[in-house]
Length: 148
Image 1 (cartoon, rainbow, N blue to C red):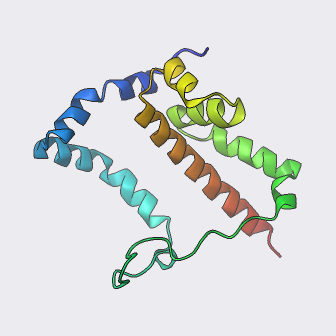
Image 2 (image 1 turned 90 degrees about the vertical axis):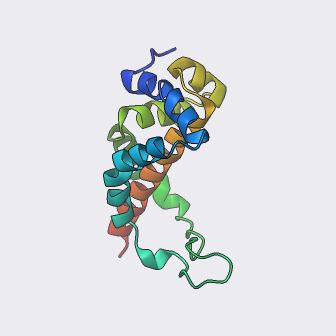
């Protein structure tokens, strides 16, 4: 099994912060938001607001406005598309790349990944979700460029 990367070991050291947040420590919360704000803003700027329901929606304000359209299978199975997926994975931050590689490429279970990388189940799920989202976004951009 691969050795845990320094970035992943640092994630395991977030336990005191998580405990402080669970205890309602506002200073810990503000510190976390302050440290993540630039990254969250970069992400938010990349999403079209028209993809979400308006704040006036009676039940689902702010939720996705429609289900994603499925991509034609033949487009996803081309060598070019597979190479694009591999490149997108290679560009991920180290922690996300390690988790998606083990889970989705090498077919490890979440328990195996957590043990090998020294992650909690929650951290593993977050890293996997972020990695899959970024790769999915890269695939969508690739397919958009190919549309006639």
